[in-house]
Amino acid sequence: MRRIVFYFFMNFPTFFLPPLLRESVLATERITQAPESLIASAHLSVASLACQHFLRVRRPGGQEGPVSLSFIDIVPSGERKTTVYKDIFQPVADFQHEEEMRMLPQIDNYYLALSEWEVEIKDLYRRKSSLKKSGKPTQAAQDEIEQMLKEKPKRPKGFKLLVQDATAEAVAQRLHEEHPTAAIVSSEGGVVLESALFRSLGMFNSLWSNEDLEIARRTKETLKIISPNFGVTIAVQEEVLKKFLKRKGSELHNSGFMSRFLVSQALPKRGTRIITGEDLSRTRSDEFKSRVTEILKATHIFDAPASKYVMEYEPPAYKPWIDFFNETELAQAPGGSFADIPEAASKIGEQAARISAVLQYVEHGPSPINVVNAERGINIARGHLMQHKEIFGAKPEIPQDEIDAGSLGRWLFKQCERYGGMSRFRRNEILKFGPAALRNTVRREAALIFMVRAGHVRLEFSNKTTFVHLNPEFFPVQNPPAWFPPPFSGLPSGRI
Image (tube, rainbow, N blue to C red):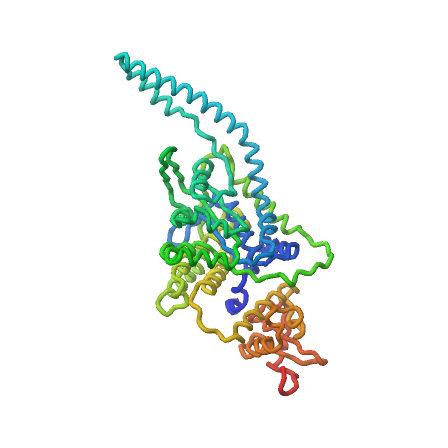
């Protein structure tokens, strides 16, 4: 399975998701025709948001932490970002609306009680002041004041999971007044990155790490946030992200800010979105959203005492996670694969554990992380780490035919998935429907030759048509044929 890395790590490794999530992602992609990586990130993000208030994960070795996830999806304009987010996060929006309606009477009662309390406390202060001016003892009045201060009405805490105002104070206020679980979700990621929340990166880093915060204010009460669970999921254009990275410069590397995000770069869909008129099923997408709603209602209970479920790995699942941790740790050494992105590599083991816990809970509820979901989390985390390296790592000089081969490989991988594991395609289909840059015949042929020499595909000339056969070791071919043609089978001399 590892060898397939060459292609799918350049996009979201959707087929590593559990069946419900995977089929919901693919159904949403068929309906919206938005990039798969954008849709898959949104699915993981909403699942994490639904679980993070109740769920924690204990990694092999005993370290424990939250399961909140944060994503940056690099997506060009016109790729239906808003459509995807509105659709996938609808269960959270609906739950939040119901919660706000349920909380309205309690909030009204709170403000009524608070106003009565303020009148009484002011009267006590005035009585104490009057006693002091007349030279009479004030201890009894002071005792009443202290008792009244202890009885100050407390604002009832509700659940407001989606944050719209991305200023640091607004986020802190939300996490202080309500239960400390929330996320910023925005298809306009540039606005979020330029917001006050990210002018100082330390606050987000602390929230990601589930650290307690205390924010002192001059004229208002100090905001105390205990054990916050907070995520950020944004879609941003590449140019906007580059501008942000340039402006922040070394601060990003010194703080490890970007390493806390799972980053992916979407393959654009514009130019391929064809309407067929068929009635596309939403069944699996609806089932996934129902599961999100079920988790929200089961774990976000107003009157229940605060409790956490700490999810551990079952013993057979220790080894895959430990091996992955050691692999990425050793690769940070000078000359290693991740020596150029040590901040991201150092956190990827924790990211894998968070992903595995979310997948396990969505699929099986409270239960130990099994081997399957441990490996799923690892492979999804590894895919994002490879994306991080591709985007932010050192850029070696790569020949154009190799770059084009990667682009063509990803397209063929996608077509293979889309058409049920089809093992061969006509070469002229690449010219008609493939990546735009490879509709140039010279570049297409050079990319094909590179892939043939790498053993990823074989070419066969039959009945005046050239077929591209996919090597099942590198593509998700279903029921691969026993016969795999020689590299240039049946091709006339001097041509491919």
